[in-house]
Figure: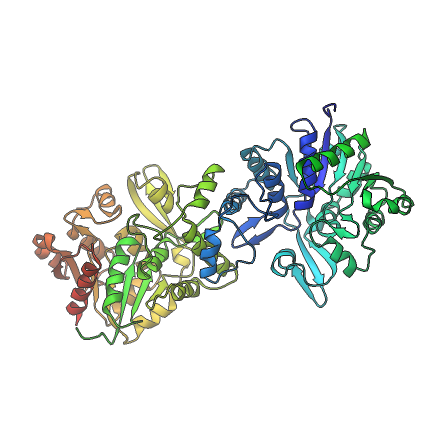
Length: 319
Length: 319
């Protein structure tokens, strides 16, 4: 395969998105992948600034992620959490000893006035990552999950309550005051991109926060590079996380078509290509009626080769 | 020895003071020891609220202190610091994994609006401590060490630069706005105390911050209970820490007499008894000229029995 000369911009949340980001990083020339990361689930916890999706991207792209846990770092130890448990402190958000160093370092840097963008860049460099990870914005945007009769901070919903409450909607506090990442806006306005890839992340809590930053989705729409979205719903299930459960609770069809409708309704003319899994081939015609080019590929990424194969499929698609 | 019916209030900084506090805790009835702790070296570090002297008291009184290191917890591990070092983060202030749990817990509690007093009380209870540890105030008071041509935050001077810069003076930023611990003020106004003991802590950076909180030293002076100060300088040396070095740099005689003069100059009529080490017996007459009752005892505390012996000597002295 020819080395890509132009850059690729990937939009990603955590685990599911990071898998494809890794495949893309393996498939483009060194330094040509830019990842626009959701920070809508960033939060302050125990005094620390925690950026779960950025960290998942950092750990995944550096090959240091914990494959068996599905989050955090490999070869992790849990001494601090055990001591905190003895103090009857909050341990529902599991912070490994090595992972804690990331949060302490980030918190100290931010307190010194370093931008989240630069903090992320320095962490990436320390971890030997040549791809560029861009937080969607500098401002703290806080996802609230609306459930029947109560509102939950995202990590309370996601981790503490293990996604059990039925959702009725979401809001992103602070998003109206947020400014889109300026480097990414420059990239979108340039001729440097060959493709924009929306990774198979949760539409509601990973991709919507990115797209709903003022001026973000229209800049993505207006960029000359084609935008390819990979459905996070395969055979009526989410590969990872609560996307399918949320769709049921929101009264949406739990299919790739439901995903496509969500994006076409909220962001007209944003999608150029919509990639669905080969097991969902029967949905092609209905999705195509929304005015999107549908492509079919094996989208379930288990091995590193799976990730690379899907990445190459996407890159070939837009060539 | 008869069990003390009344309470004892001890003023303490970190390691040196905590030794005598432990001796006192062993020598009074359960719950009858109150320790008024210096928080002038509290600081924010890596997003965490760190209270070094309170922690030393907590760890010492619970029997969990690291005797070989002289600070921190016994059986400590250092995973987080090693990971932070890999990130080229700030590791000059060594935070053990178990110690970190204390800081994370305190920071979270303070962020929830719990007072430092209550946070400290909860930590003490968790550690099985029956004595009462009172922070000198709720407000953040920050000790600045003035050195030739530059000012240093206390922990930068003390830990990062290992007390190497020559000091010219000290200031306690925020102290004028601080309010003395109200429980201690009530205790001082009551008939409940049999003695006030100023532990052999650093006069300049451990005891002065406590005494210089508005209304504090006069309340201590006006309390009916006798006040006994134990000299931190023995045979011209400090048992622990930079007190002797500071006295040289400040042009003071590095003796128990120098210590006594410091207190008598700044806080007239505060001291009732001044305890010096038996090796300094020759200084009795000169110190007595300052208008203080001088008592002589073995003041170097190595074993737990040494600590108890000195505590009992003091309690017998005031009986």
